[in-house]
Image (cartoon, rainbow, N blue to C red; front, side, top):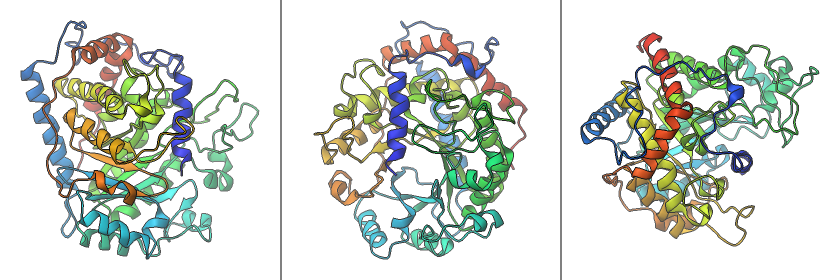
Length: 458
């Protein structure tokens, strides 16, 4: 599972030689003039967003959180917590008769109130799905969760908020069974990434239907939230062949937005929260980071957005005044997340929805970046403090080895409000003002146009 971290890092390194504001010319981003967001044309001299506007933004954000919580508050199951404090669990951990009780004990004694659990990864579907295609693709030894509903019920009985993680487009097993659903090479062969992985095309609605049917099963099993990961295009390196998508209809973000919109259409009636994992750099780039993760257009269509804000995944050129990101977790996160907060402010002030920001935080060592710098209690606390200092309440820690007992001392004993009043720094406001002219305003306009034409949720 550490490959998720390394894969993200590889793109971050490739972006290190490109200004973070660069838009992706290949994405075909709309250059129409802005409408709803025309007020955001100020210069770097604006020290912060006006207090009245921030009050409107805060009220709208609170309303969005309440709306998501109401949809996910089915009888007998914990509603969306006002403060999400979570851990990632593999399916193998969740299905273990020894490891799961240990992690439940950790949650009982700390502020942890949320578990994110793999139900489908690039290794396959990890529970006995009833879907014909999932049964066809089932791999012996890779179904560690014997009964999904019973697992979820036990977690709810422990007072935990449950999130089902579904890996979507990185799916070599599906490619092997349905090669016509895959990303192709120009010569017609199956496209392969630098790690040897095969991907299905984000444009293929047959891929959408399969993953959304699994999401519906997870919702019916009792999960309160469905979280889509690898909901992106693979990185396009110059050393690799071009990616061919037979069903293309727009730019990369159009494909991701279309999938998430269909997810909302199918999952909203089931009362679950819809969320998506995005690259951390999507907070700090006006464009789509080359993979379809354009912040404004994604944040405006889902309930929760989870940027992978791992300090180890930034380089010294990514963020202003952050020279050693992995050794500066507090500074890395306050800078990166501060930009996301300002961007969501501007969505709300333009009359658009903005997703609840729940950053993924780093609970793993990164020896490929910093061989002799382990991440322990001090680094965990620094990240938590950074999240709260930019006015956010929520966080989830990622460790592919699920070794959270070693950092348990970083967690508070109770789940309490911790977010602090956040005065937007003039340096970050100015940076976002520059992003307005580098494509961000146009992308917000595109989000506005889609919001105005989409059907109302049930």
